[in-house]
Length: 108
Image 1 (tube, rainbow, N blue to C red):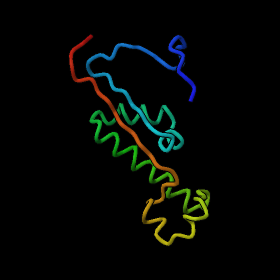
Image 2: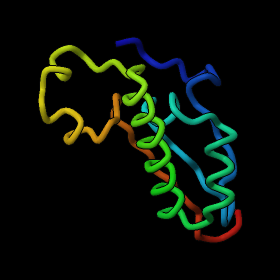
Image 3: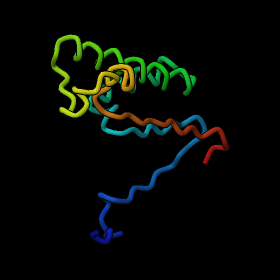
Image 4: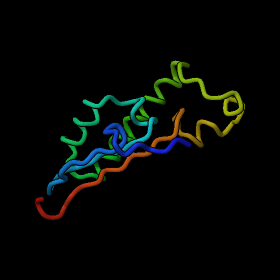
């Protein structure tokens, strides 16, 4: 594994995280299905982080289920032969992880 060069701004970024600011982190299972503007729109619409994350997950399940119905979501062969595939993954072809970190503390 390569050592991180701390002099490169590509790897380390610093910014002020003020009261009310939110940080959204997600895996490719989320980022491959929703665009940045779509995610930002949901974060603006659903101010409550829990409601926002639920909406993001439900939106991705809808997208993935539509792909399955059209036959455009091709899971690996070993999963295609698994009779419980659709029930187990509920239509998602990729795993998804997302978290919203919100600063509820003081202004900086």
